Length: 231
Image (cartoon, rainbow, N blue to C red):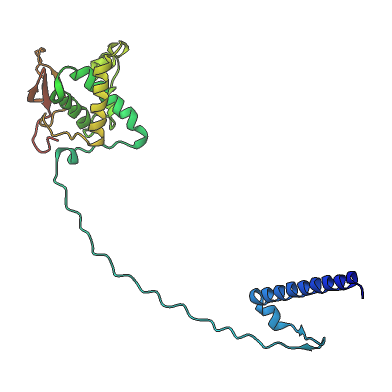
């Protein structure tokens, strides 16, 4: 037998051994992932005879019962003190937050510009309080722009004042203040004593059916008669 022939036989033996190893590996994988198929059929023996393989016994273990975790202690929130703002809610949907802020800023800018923080908050109180009173719209924009012509509730909304350019710095201040009031960052504290109306102190006006409450800066404030609920 020549060297080349012996080498060819050796290579054939190696190839055969590799094929057998691959077959055994595949069978083991099938047995691991498909035990039902092997237990139901017959595997050929070494001599070609069929013999039934031993049936596999699979014990199904019951899952351990779930143990309920101990209940967390009930947390009782501390009641918040009642304030003016908690009673006089500012109900603003997120979708209208920007427009309501803009309208409140208009009232602050045109009616309280130069009056300082106290005067600005006083005007904001009147606007917000009206949204909770009969006879007025239930939104800030509705209150600020209520009426038309000479019957406007706020004169700046109808007399052309809004068409004139705004002072950038004072307008920015009004917008920031309105946003703080609407979001509750700056609470309203009823400094006008339930007022729903006001006029300039320079105007000599007798308002029938209204009760004067306080003068803040250059504005005089009024509420309806009765002290049942000044808010």
